[in-house]
Length: 79
Image 1: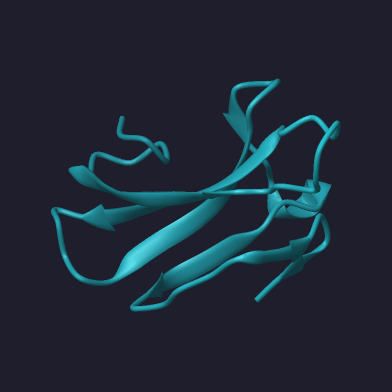
Image 2: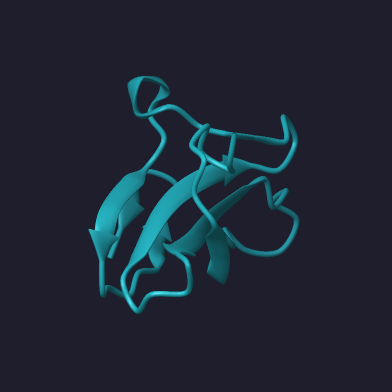
């Protein structure tokens, strides 16, 4: 299957790192991918230590396919 367990051609759309300041480990990143290079992207939170996407049921962020921009406000909040 594909990146999200689907047979879809996903294209890299960028990433946003959670930066909580100096001395704080960088362990979370929002990854954005588009279906076949489309303008709209799906964004999911990735755990850099576990090397896996975080499930929404475990507190991970997942944004539906849309033309959107995002940034972290803090570990529990996206803007």
